[in-house]
Image 1 (cartoon, rainbow, N blue to C red):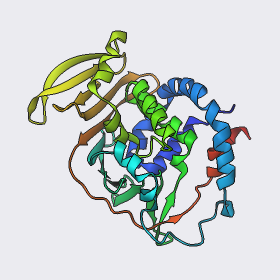
Image 2 (cartoon, rainbow, N blue to C red):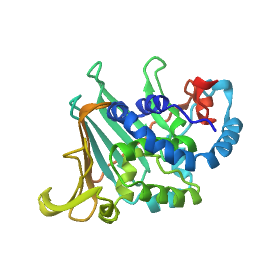
Image 3 (cartoon, helix red, strand yellow):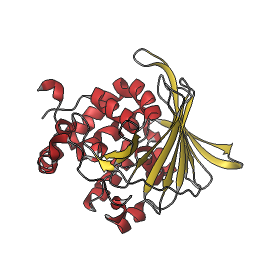
Length: 308
């Protein structure tokens, strides 16, 4: 079995979310070993299946579809009840990369089962917007063609395992709850990792971290946050990650993930932060033309293009 280059993973994540990918790129070397161990266990049984599906699904030789979708959110009609049973409420997530001093705000609409992300382009300073639907299609505006385009590159089964491995390892989250949830959703025909970090809020609870405390991974304390004294904080107990923590609010909802890397030989120093807010929001997806990304066919087959 061939494994996929983690450099490619980061590149594809950059397509999905520029700000988040900046921090993930710094974490990729440290995440690689843990991710590959899980991949060797979990991906082997999936690669053949995904390869077969990918070959069946390859059309137009990578060219854009001839006609755009006539409606904005066709994914909403697929397994709607099952998706809403998991994605039960709206969430707003702010990502923060201290080194870049950049924010991305993502709005998840549980009724529409869709996400919108807003950020400022670090190169031009211009505001940017992208979308993700419930089947994992990434939607953005192509200025040169004057249209919205969508790609399902991140919704492949292989990618749905690789990307979380990097994020879970980088953000120091217990992997067990994620994979247990993933298996349950897979049995229902759903892919976990559709909305990336949004899904952490629907999975993780304080008890997941308490179960890991026996391995000296976390220490627990009560602190004040967001106007209440009853927030639960789990400090990450690992060399090079001093000051890192995961925070839950008074209702045991995931409130904040703050990861600080200090003087790491491979990563240097930096900080990545996610803040979760449980507030109503509305997302309207634009109608978009489906396209294939360069190299997508090989990626979906679970191959490393560098080895061909």
